[in-house]
Image (tube, rainbow, N blue to C red; front, side, top):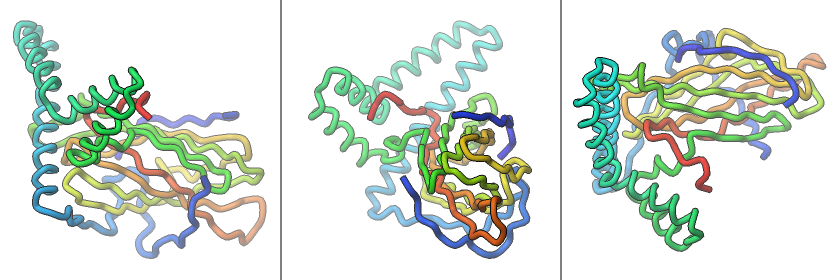
Length: 268
């Protein structure tokens, strides 16, 4: 994960406290120097579910590749080829099951056909559950609010090599009446194949920021994946700094999607 920007700002439900795992903690914020503590692959259940997931990943790879090829053609001023790929993309978006169901669900909500919207949502849940997770999340633990938003970075991705690059922006707001300091981070990163990595590190982007009451801290970083979709979640270990010998707290970062197709933020 590469640091993209850093900004301090001012003025802007409860999670579960858990002990911080032991082991190696001396990694820096940029993930390429972080030690991956654990890696596993979840059992997807039935063979049919595994086949459905594999099919969706394959279609997503095709979609990402077409978008990149259209951008390359446009930059090289091969507009005829760019137009051809654009038309292929439009046909793909009309016929691809996940994109079609998402569009139908959005239209059903807009027209207040909520029974239809529920049916489309249930079909999506069976076909590609990853797509129902938003590319943003918002959680508060003991007055510490963490908001996240992710975005696909097409220019730094290479779908033909199974390399997908996602940036995410995090805003931490201290709505409590005590100052805190961010000590460590823990990320759980899962790709579309169910492979999970646990990553622990010191602070964020090389900092262990102190956050005063009613102020905040904001930063951006990034995550590479080998699949077109996935998810991240985690926690920040923090401590109160207005007293000595205080117990640390674990502040939840709620799950959010990493997706080349993004999400429809107006669908609830």
